[in-house]
Image (tube, rainbow, N blue to C red; front, side):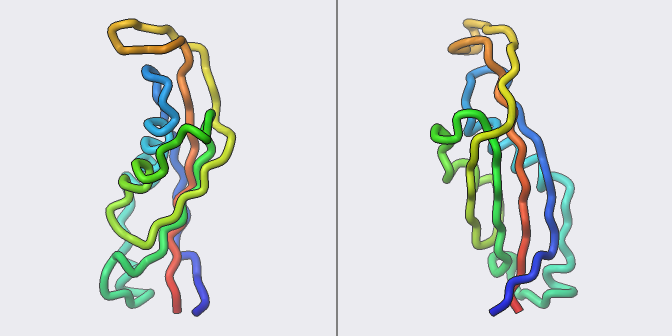
Length: 120
């Protein structure tokens, strides 16, 4: 079956304290899907359930090898999900606050693209 892209949404996420690239990546994905409604999945593509759509996620984040991929994908409520994590985003010098369990003064910024596809 041929796949067709229905929508691509982009988002950004930041972990200001904790230096966890998974947190930044999950926030970027959540930001990308936060204000979407996809009536076209039913009205145009003719799917009968949202788990029939294909959701491909690409995230660029510092320290990609430390990303816990299942936690990032858990942000997505539906779909046949896949995730590609690559080096990118930004590391910005912030302020380490011991009470917030900071390991250092890094703030991690991730960017994400979430693509919804349908098969026809």
